[in-house]
Image (cartoon, rainbow, N blue to C red; front, side):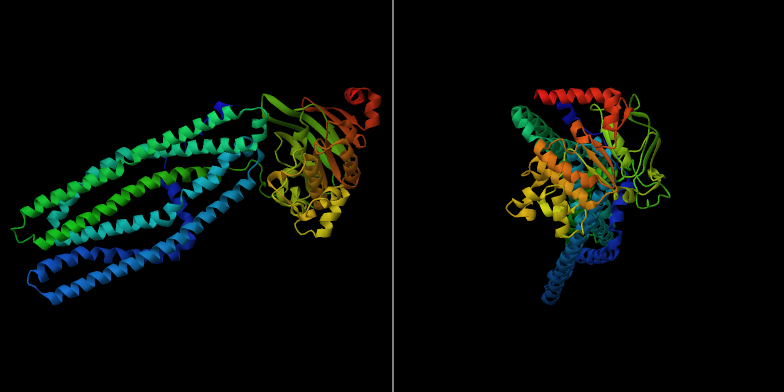
Length: 593
């Protein structure tokens, strides 16, 4: 168990620009807002860069000659440009925050819609916790990039270009001296970028492992407490939490090499400007005002350079999440509408299996050469040991899986050629573990038919004998039930699921061990309701308790992937074969009890 939980996911594919461009595609619907933001950015950048130039003019032209009128004017201009800069920045932040949150909303919607289309095989091989990480943590980690990062990098890039142009206009020689340190920056980025990306990928993976284990641990808390396994689960949780701490600190250590490196390179540029600038003060090319203004611009260019470096760092962190999000979005469902699929007409209920074969592992076939025909309205019982293939048969009818070989036909239609929605809308599936949603009992039953009236919901509950216990609850049908119906007994949950299925009025009904958790007294009431539920519908009933299927039109004994016997109860008893032995053994056991 420990190795299974801690096992990491495979590292994502290397960072590439196509994924980044794909992420930017989510911003396309907000082109107008982005253009406005860019214009605000340009105005803010220009107004913010005029300060050192005003300072040069003030020193060289007004202070030196005591021109107070000119000094007052230049001061007012300086204040005005700063106010413009602040107003533009404020509006820019508001617009991009709005755009960024709308983009995150769209990504979340796309992810949720996509996972609803994914096949059972996807969920069979992935813990729910790791899927939650993609939808919640990874999407949230893109927030800063989309609301501030992308626009900020454009702002910083534009600011850098304008500052360099102004510096070159003031003094080209000092500009070249300042830019001589840029190659050092490129070396720093080149050395650290790949390592930083790998470290943040590790952090994402460790968080994914933690969420997967946490989800599993909470879901199985009763089992943990029943077997007194709290110390073991606590130890494993501590190990996973320690992994997150270690990988996070490793990433931070490498991450924090960036900004000191940038600051050091920037300081070196300032030192060079002082050395060459002070040495040129005696010449006509450099004045005190020029040198002071130039130092101001040097810090102004290193600030956006520092921001750009940090943005790249943040981008690597965000792209680690982007890779995982797109990996999920690019996962194709195994079961989907074929090209040219058409809606199946109203189902009459004939089901035909033609030479059907199925396996999860080629070395271990689940079904092999299964052939049978079910007439409309027949009730078919599937009996056999665990793992014989009973549930696989009914899953293939609902097209939760596709056969490896052969066909499943309903009313003569190959179900691979019809749309999934039209097929499943006319089918009802009730499982041993009846799922109850958070909400009222009324809402849970109405889930079978969303436009049903209260009277229709209550009538469905009466048919399956659920009305009695529901009416005795404090608020009746409007009693709130918690997650997975925790306040209901297993039998009550199954009765509610029966009412839900009856309300949906399916043409084909599947009961997979749906009465296994109901006591004998309740089962008598349920059987009376099921008689009406099954009437006029093609039904498949999987049951280990043979007393529940005596009235089935046909009973199929399934084992080793094939149908060994088929017939009604009386016919199979007369055969004295497998069913006879199973029934006799169960009858003796019940009498002994």
